[in-house]
Length: 217
View 1 (tube, rainbow, N blue to C red):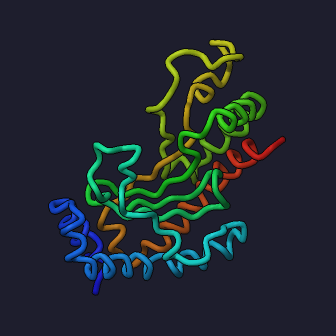
View 2 (tube, helix red, strand yellow; view 1 turned 120 degrees about the horizontal axis):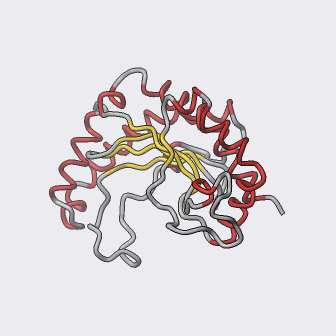
């Protein structure tokens, strides 16, 4: 087996997106998933040496479910068109994420659509420590790779903040997350594990900023 199995399977699944097809091709799915595990097991070991706070025990347990949640999104297909791998510090915290998809591949991290209480704490931290956040975002190691997600923002001004606030554009964000777009060629390369580890080291200051904000009393 090779890493190409991952994308070959996902492309076939995307064309035959049904439980019946998946049931007939369960062994192929398991082979593709095993390839993902082979990539990320040594990566996880290295990441846990760099940051013992990471809670995932194995790479296999770090792979997100390939089923879409049809209860909340009945319009979506039965299965996703990607494998998602998440490494982090516990439920509800900003985490590190790798997306292996047929249409999109990325290394990413942050806090996605947090509940109102956490978003409020995050905005308070930006209000008080926005200069520090800007330093993180402008650091060359981060800025050379990652782009801050800015599509999901308030059009107006968050309650309690002035429209001319120094960090108003950051305060308007409903998520604080960043993405590094990569390619299938990167994922198939021998250096991909090093890319993932480098990505984590580059984005870790942002994750720390977010998690400090949302866990403070």
